[in-house]
Image (cartoon, rainbow, N blue to C red):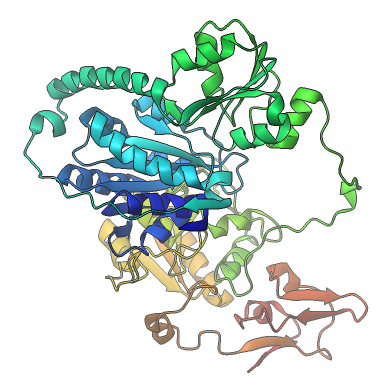
Length: 593
């Protein structure tokens, strides 16, 4: 039947139809919805792993044992998974294995814009690049057949626009791929140097066979129109190009892009007067085309930008020097709205107080709390990657201890990030005897990517009950002696904990424990946080002097009535966290049922 699906939904559907039995992932935009949809199929075991490396290894284990497996992550997650990935390419598969890398051109939800097609080339992985949701289904099914036929893991490179855009798909029935027999085979699966040297030779031979497949792959095709203009494109760029050039150009549409089809590329280019190579980010295709010694006029990154998305407007400006007409306006008159914490966010109280301290450096991490870098908090000084906050804080503190500044360093990260790679960072801090203050924001969910479960939430990806890993016990086991668990909405508790830990000459941990205001509360949450959002706050107008001190907490439920010179609280948004009430110098903010 025909359905409307996003690319992420279609990837999951393709895995279902291909007979996948095991799926593992770590959430990260734009890949998150892949595993969320996989978890809805009873036939597929689906799990959230603590990080991408573990997810990759779980999927590898399933494939070695004989079941078709899938692992999905955003582009920076592949950095974490690269360690097992490169060796896995040497080993080959038993049952089919597919890695989904969801890249983010334009950095809509990412700290960098890396092009993971380079990973496929470097690790020597077969790679597909879908352009729409139907190709997502088709390529996933083809990838498993290719994986088992050529004894290779396969990477499917998605981009944000393909992941989140919807298009019509034709769905089919599930084909049950039987679990293959596992046989002990150290010469294939034990990568000692003597074995790996032999596997490296086999890997090269496999790539040569895949290069032959690339020439005949149904996902690499020519659409011949006029020979004056040729376009080579992959992924969503193919549709962007069609919107601009329409039938005035011929197209080499590439869907299987590692190895690339050398013969197909050269034959296409030699028929054209000029060829435009359209691709987002790196000149991956362009560099390959240039190596083929083509005779036509060739344009790639010499006229197209190396960053952001290759939208139709970008193509028009690059080729024709102008874009489509649009309504013009004075952008300087727009009122900027900075992103902020949700009303009732448990991170607000902590960062409101951290921002008041000028004698510290705050090392941040990847999560909702990264917003604390902006106003009104200005309470983060660095953010690099998952789990880095505590390691960066340790390194910075070692230098601060040698300098005359005497500054103390505070590392901040969330509960899911702590489980991801923060544990290792804290181990390093303890082992190398730093004196940082390490704050773990335990909001009982993976908040930034849409409330996925993690080892501290009590549920699996499929919603079944699971053990809750106790963060306090973990940090004590690592070697932290000074641990404080506080309610971050209580500003007095926040200040006392910071004062106490900053006075120490050894590492300490503060755990701010309060659930994300947007999560669906479990019975355990309701029991532990007894008075969870039972009341709201409102302003008593006769007491409010319009000083705006409460507005500096950055709560979006609050606004200033300039005519009345009073603060207002939107009752539809307020959840009664009381942070504003504790800041008010006139006790003008009170509780209401």
